[in-house]
Length: 522
Image 1 (tube, helix red, strand yellow):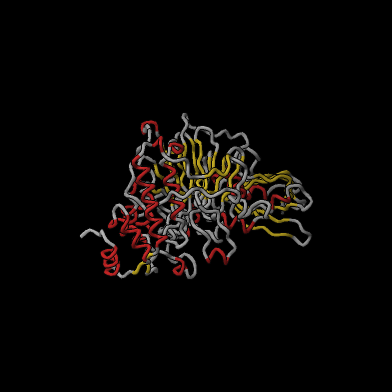
Image 2: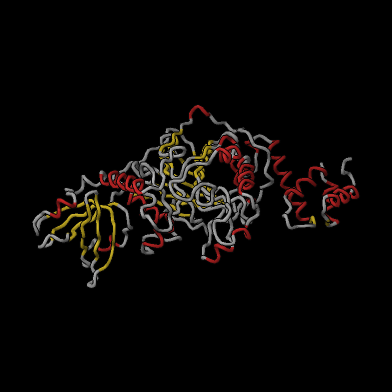
């Protein structure tokens, strides 16, 4: 029987175990479709709520009306852009000076279709360095030897043109006072009693000690070193030839002459990360506003959505995480994320990589999702690649890496070189080292494979990370480095470790110019 009277609505609520404010019942009875309105109101009611309030019903009815109006009007007659623009390609942004956007969000709708003027034939996307389905590591000793040897050879090849390299065993047989150069992996860094720096470098033949005097200009570079990265040095051997006094130090680095590629047409990509569906701090309203904006004429050129990990909150990631979960089951978290993903235009190309909260192994490189998760993540045929992955979008090469190693870079290096407030500067260090996670044995877990998938063999045009929940971007040797913030408000755990997240931001990249605009939806 239709719910056409307040009495019938009260009876239906009671049969489902809910009470309601009188004003809430009146609003439901006056709705164009009381039955649908009641279902929507209960679906979006917090799990611990036992009473339906008038404010909640009113918000549900308003969102339903705005969605119905938007679907019923041509795209050109949509309301003004609900999002506010933060900035256009400055060197940094903390996201603190943007005004919130107008609320036009709503409940997760059925999977939306493409209704924009998009020519799919012009799209081109390629993915390289995806190790999904190609993992060979067994954890045996030889696996580690293989991956580190591969790292050394790849990075050494980028340094051989800068120094006259000699293997360590050759240097050991050279006469004292000779000039020498060495390419090696940093195996140890320590300061001497006199305050100088002793750096031990290892190549495939052995190890050799290198001394950087504290009064040399290059002494500051030693503080930027991480264990297991590959560098080159040149200098003069001591009289007894037992140590190399370093005159110059070189990183594999991105060439200063790097010229990024651009798309042949005006097309855009939204670069986001750290959605964290399943957390009780997931910002669903901000996501609704973002998805609604993607349907507006202003977002017509946004044809790609690239998500750099942590689609869901996960389970057991940190102590007592279960107290901060809105959805306890990991599979239900992915089902919910897939529902939110359905809100974006169906004609968008969606590519994602996992993060440390996702249901894959923690050790990097992380493979894409298994078949069970892929069966859940069916919205808009979104593709999940490994972490990291090199995604080339209409000629623009975008290195997508979730960014767990940024914690280590920020902890190990001086504040002026790497900090959470300016996460892109920590990314500069990874570009300089040409490796997304150089240090083994620290906080970043690394898995040995038949080759090192974490080396930046190709210079990307864009380097996109997440993980640290901070927004920041800038250019390093013409490479755009972006950490894209998150879609999760501050959790109790984040408060305990002094993380103040930048939430609800969507960086929009012009692929034809590599200019970027950041929009705020929270």
